Length: 516
Image (cartoon, rainbow, N blue to C red; front, side, top):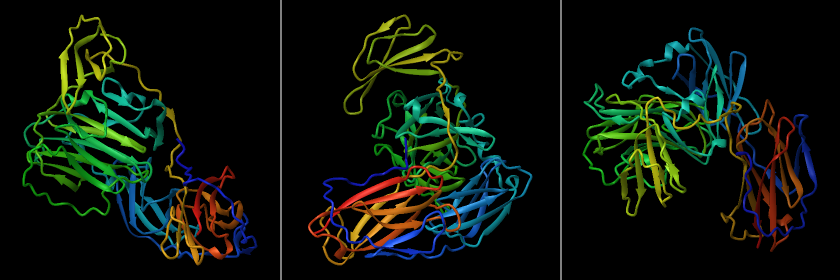
């Protein structure tokens, strides 16, 4: 899936006579000469401001997470002879020597490629790493470090296989999710027990990074038998979810669950949501009278509800892409139950190595019926809205490992966008006044471009370098367009081209607006 291309509303493209054809030149790098047509005004950008307040932490003993304060379009990070552009005030540097101090420099970058003075920070991964987070887990954390991580004895995956891959992370690899939706059902249940030192009767922990601004991760604790049913948009009966987006984190619970008056104090976290390309660790901590969400050990959300079931089944759902790193559960130790769920859209043979088989059928009003199937039943006839659940012997493998292709590292970005608004506030799709000025806004999300070009009805009206002191970054460019240069009572078509630094094909966005 190519996240770089976005085309805005196209329709009835009646071309207009463009009078803005005379271009004026300015000083710019050799890669692209700055040109601005008469009747167009480029809104000046502020110089980038040096970032401030650097902070370091580590989720692994050989990785550093550096965060800082700033409001720039993007940032350039330098360390150990390496260089990376990031769209948010945070970066993760894997594959470091735990004993060696790493010197890091961060520069704010403007939309035209100007760099600020550097902010500097130095840290050793071992000094900021705290490995106590997994002390309350049952067994070792599960690392999504290769195809074996999705062993069908441990996980049932609901996703298009072509949208799952492996991306480098330090010396190893992790699961890269590039799907509109992917669900990972754990075959390891969570059984709640006596409260631990922190009051939790059970917990689930996930380490994950976002992919783009629209990434959405949901970790749900499902009561039986909802773990056998396909993922849907509806909240299953009796379920509680940890809901994570780039905007923040919340707990979502079935409204029918008992509520309490529990009050939980939230921690002081500068950010509470997903970050593109940077892992964070979320914990879903189940208390007797509440469910609490923690991000890197800081409480960021809670819901005063009681989970009434004693056993639940964790499911991870990722929408819009993400980077799946680690998973773990806490509570009373439970063994993995190798389980296969087969839709009965055709006749299905009951395998010979099963220890139990069930017929699960979803009905109306959230009703689910479960029928035990004799192990010698042989062939089960096809049925609508039904699934055959097969629980196999512990040594069995219900299916093959997925084929995961290797993918390059780096941060995925969305496509460019174009917006139009008249100076009196009017916006498409309503016709814009044929007098005054129109503000054209170009939003760039790509990393590493050398410039942009803006065309009006097939004629270039702006050429703007974006690599003044290095490769271009995500940013916002604004242009005032004098409507007196346009024909009235007609449609005008704008086309934005983002020119890659490697000389490849431009990334395009288009939009159309009507003049009175």
